[in-house]
Image 1 (cartoon, rainbow, N blue to C red):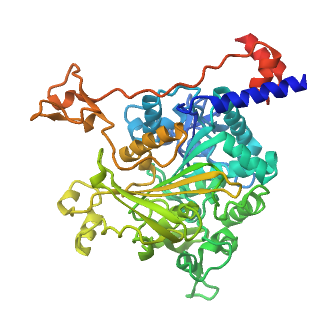
Image 2: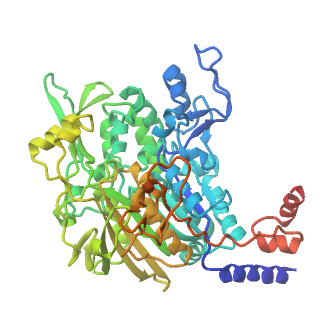
Image 3: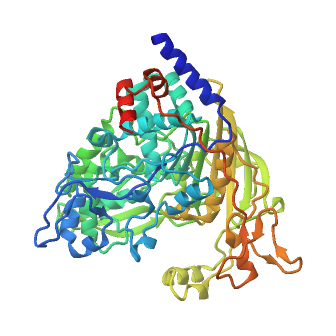
Length: 627
């Protein structure tokens, strides 16, 4: 019987490998911090609000109505016990499925303002015709530190089984993972957890990863952390909801995940050549022991994560006693992974590191004690551009110093990298791009590559001051200045792993795209579609020479030739309500990729064991009988 099982399992593997190359692979979406809904799993009476209790299934993140009318109740539901990360009032758990990440606050008014993954999901379901069994969401309680996700919710074990089931069920070459922001750190911890608890050895772990993960798209990854968690811990960080900074701080300091992405330096030990790591990242001033005197202490990036900052602040602020306990218990003593270390490239065959650049990032802070245990932000400094990396800055949330760590995945120092600069326009041809090869010296520094493009802002200092004053308001266009057309910068490298397996790595840098806006950026969605076609074909690094129209708005009527322009991609398709010929020019219906191989439900113990080797056969057949 055992021999029969082995034969059937081998046949299953051969069938998977022999399946058509052009196949839509299952996709797993991993949202970022505060980017998925949290629902109540326990009834809770709100004091002073008759008939307004929290009921099982109610959405708490984000319920704008409850936040405005029952702020205290909402805060108690969202907070956790700082030291053990348990629920205080409501029992909140992550939502499930695409509805949990499409919009955070569905509604006529709040819906469009809280869109997160909607455009990515529409691209995957509309262009590739994906269904519920092909598009999975790994939503999690983003308030928890990594180890508690497994301890309380068994999140990483569940994610492991869902990926394995998807690969077995669809006989695919693996899943495609698309993660955003903190979701990438979740994936890193997941891979470390799988290796630590399941595979134990590097060879077994690499074989599992290559069999089950075909490609990985890393969007807005805070590889070396972000400065925003520091604000959360000291003063509270506003996220544009009608709450006071003190309320924000109470919430954010109770969430163990806040310290997950504290900023860290590039190396484990002091590096005199790393200017960012050497400079003061935060300074605090408080009254001295002698009347009329003050004490100022300064801290580097490394001191924010090794406990020096926490212990010093605890002498003035009791909140930091709890925060130091959380840092030590859930991070410094984590048996699976020290998340406050740089991430080396995982053994996934194809990886795409994607982020925006050219936005100001809050990077260094000066605080003053306004009263015992409370702080005021006095000075704020933005990220200092580095000429060695074309004076680039981050995406408005994560610094370029952190985002650009992905360049270290482009082979070793001294390796050749192909560089391509293309427009973010809806369509372009070869004459619109620039392409060359360069040598990566270290980090994101290159020799022999494309010349740095001019600054995105050509305005004078006075005009820039006016722009900042008026921000993005009604009068902002009066002081707008000419700027270069936004570009996409592609960095591509192909190599081999220590075991001789191919590795394909790409870094995509989008000019002037903010952190969360990347998920709805048309240029990114276009490139995602093209690259997914390549991934589904078993290839990597799609040709960047031409991009045809991909949306109806890209097509228009050519009056001289009396037809729609781009006839290979656009067609005349009149629909009721069109009033111009341009409106009737639409993108041709996309050619659907081959669907997944059909799956026949098992009818015998042998078939059940072959199809689902990690599921008890009796249970498998029982579930089949129920169907």
